[in-house]
Amino acid sequence: MSGTSLDGVDAALVDLSHIQPKLIDSYFIPYSASLKTSLLQLHQPAHDELHLAQLISIQLAKIYAEATLALLKKAHINANQVQAIGCHGQTVRHRPEHGYTIQLNAPALLAELTNIHVVSDFRSRDIAAGGQGAPLVPAFHDQVLRHPNIHRTILNIGGIANLTDLRPNTVTTGFDSGPGNLLMDAWIHLHQGKPYDQNGAWADSGECLPSLLNRLLSEAFFTTQPPKSTGRDLFNLHWLKQHLQGNERPQDVQATLLALTGESIVRAIQQFCDGTQEIYLCGGGAHNQALAAYIQGALPHCLIAKTDVLGIPADWMEALAFAWLAHQTMHLHHANLPAVTGARHGVVLGAIYPA
Ligand SMILES: Nc1ncnc2c1ncn2[C@@H]1O[C@H](COP(=O)(O)OP(=O)(O)O)[C@@H](O)[C@H]1O
Ligand SMILES: [Mg+2]
Image (cartoon, rainbow, N blue to C red; front, side):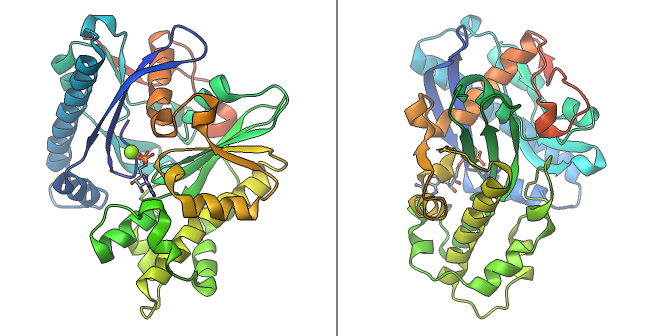
């Protein structure tokens, strides 16, 4: 898995022979600063972008292969013991309203380098069936984290944040709530050169600016009814700068961005996950203590914990989900949830590149 945060590649080796998946081992390769810069540039129209996108796709596939081979070595597992690699690729455009989404990847090269079947391009078929192609993880949450009597909500805080609502005896819903870490990451990188604001400490040192927060929250996406999904196409530094007056203290902007992520999540929960009793956090943003405190402060009656307490480590949830999605593809099982993505019907997700 390589998500919107552009932090790197999460490789998870997963045993899916039982309903409850088991994480056997894991391996992370961070992106170099230059790769992250190149990927960020490809989010915008650029000269000769088709050629550049192919070169980056090849570079990514080599990193995916390196992560796979390092993981197998670490776990003492041979390639021929692995059913398939589920490889999401790196999103550089997400435009379901135009009928497409682009995840850079070179799955044929990954299959060649690893000698393992590769499942990729998970989102296109759902979009072809009229859906958003996202979020896809709610189906996995539904499979492994549902409780028969307790209303649970799963909150994945990656670059973008998404929610899965698991209400007893009710069909699972889910959607993107808006920015997770990506604006906070971009702002601290601009001012301090750091990739992210550890534990939200810099945000905590500033004051939230209520008028700026209100301007940011007036973005139409926040009040759009699900199904909905988003990405860097909408939420990026350019979008933020349009709302700034220019005289704000940087740490106050960071505090406001943390409040934006927190408040958009809280409002989404109040509106669409009404009455939830337990909120389980996953994704890297689950480590942002200031953000968790914001959400807990606004929803004092909810239990808030990381998914680790349910047996799935917060940092590996999405990689496990894509292993499970690949397993579904290999068995030709439908894996989208039409109530989440808005697709007209269930579909088999992904394309298979045989070893
Ligand atoms: N200790 C931490 N404090 C605050 N944020 C963190 C911390 N650890 C990780 N993060 C955030 O999590 C991000 C990575 O999360 P991840 O779940 O991999 O997102 P994505 O799926 O978008 O790649 C980092 O870019 C950073 O913003
Ligand atoms: Mg990541």
